[in-house]
Image: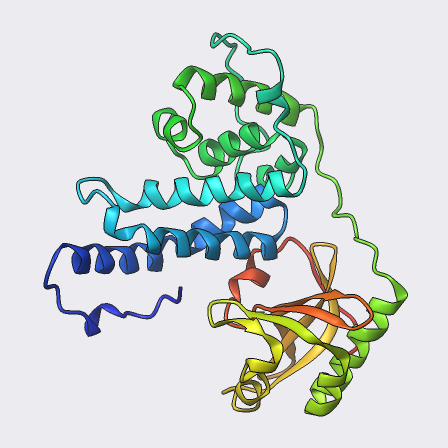
Length: 303
């Protein structure tokens, strides 16, 4: 969802319209925080964006059942949190704290580590999901213990115990450099050809690189078959100068969308690929510049 003010087009004629207006207004102020949380939970700014969009779509579908007497923000965060847990389970991550023998709710308080904030955000991936969520919600987003307990479906005592375990582990850890995910020579070759042909506006050449049933997801705009999308037309009429280049975002090989500034080209957003013999899936984040802004490391190779 964009942060454009859509409320001017709505007439508040009933309870659903009021919910919808509140929903849009909340998203406009909460979008960055939701993405930040989901990115740190999933370990990827791009996975985090995908999860946020799933969460917002789910919230919109359930909006007519939302209780107006409750604030929307915690409701949205809980949906986003649950989608993060679903993502981690799909990826095969298990919450060791939940699987272990239940620990008592009594605990010895541990201080927040590393001054909280971004320093914590970049090492929480060493923690099981529940501990990770509790540390992020408490030490980064400053939620109360009661609010966290509701969000992660626990008790205040359970949250305290998870925080203590997490802070103890983090105090014994140190930030590590982002590891680079390996890319096959074939994928790198296809991505390089994609960049070269796209920059030449050789759209037929780009089509040759994609499979007949390739899927395209232009975040916040389109999801479906690549052949059904007005993809090249939209790039052709983009309102500012752009070009593509190979690069990495938080250690993952991607195509970087560069925007021309007064003096130089700067990273604006990214495009992700799934490659078999040809390009099977493209996820384009050009409408989501916050993906790059939230990344720890961004590097650009030759365009």
